[in-house]
Image 1 (tube, rainbow, N blue to C red):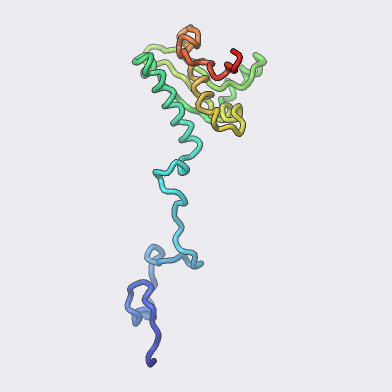
Image 2: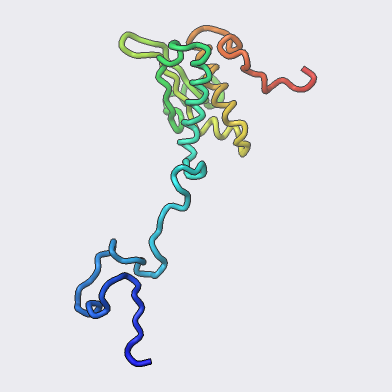
Length: 171
């Protein structure tokens, strides 16, 4: 076995390795610590790659579509928003009234502005605790309650299934 052992790792000519030229970071196959390139752990189409905020938004859209099937344009014209937590002004009003932190708030329509329902993600998630299976119903319940308040209707009239998860086997 005469000659030098050469392993072609990057497709370059071995004689050019010591020519003094350096490769750009993007051209290297591995980073400088030899661990390889870092990439996403989960591919984008997989459900685990969605953030909590994105999953919460999906629940809001699902609930709004569920209500739009029943109420049509009346629901689709509403401006739905998500905020992480209520603003200080909203929290101060709740504290003064002696109530819990609100899960959502609503604002009636004004000239040039549609009705608005704002959901607060963290209070709803905290109310669910670690039971993520409750989150879809809690989001839907918050939206139905706000629509009932906006439209001065009973929540059961907005969604006949409202509150059905509270009914036990004896009810």
